[in-house]
Image (cartoon, rainbow, N blue to C red; front, side, top):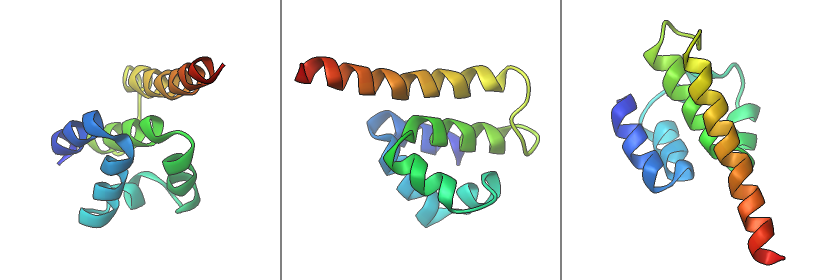
Length: 89
């Protein structure tokens, strides 16, 4: 399942979040409450997808080198905001 989600995330991270919510309980297992994935859907979609995938792939948590990919997803989210601001200006 995480590999399929990663393929959908390449198209759109928000699509991957919707598919994780519709067809599985990955978001429910990775996050304690529903507020973080909902906020992540609008603000940091790559980070939410990265955290949820590596939470499931790992030992039911994100440990060690997996944090590198979550931080990389966070930087990708920040870069998308910066690129959008530069295109508007």
